[in-house]
Length: 155
Image (cartoon, rainbow, N blue to C red):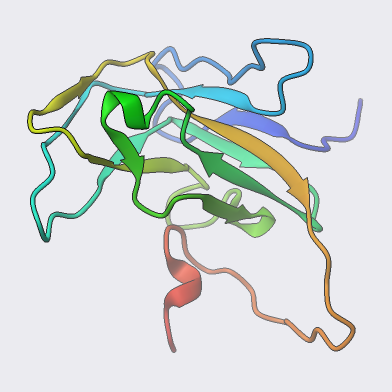
């Protein structure tokens, strides 16, 4: 059996929801296109509104010295979709975490003056896998114990 290096899996709770694995559309594409796992309405932007989380039904795994980025599509802003955090960075230890199994979501604002309807199967974003570097005196020893936003939590 081949060693798992990096890839996508169906997140818990989505096994029977006909989730499609992300694909690259062309041979030289850097990113994997990701679809929405369910229908969602993204309301027109209002000051103070929170972004809408769009479930993917997916989790992704990668090597310890890698992460993956969640990115908007180039057509996103033209359609009114702007990622709340510009780029989502997901660490290798997010995979399989105890609070949400590593299920990743895209978070968007709708900058139009009317609601946007996202249908299950619509391509909502892209994922790119990358390596990262450490500084000489790196001493990180923490262990992830949660899911979304868990590295911000204080004991």
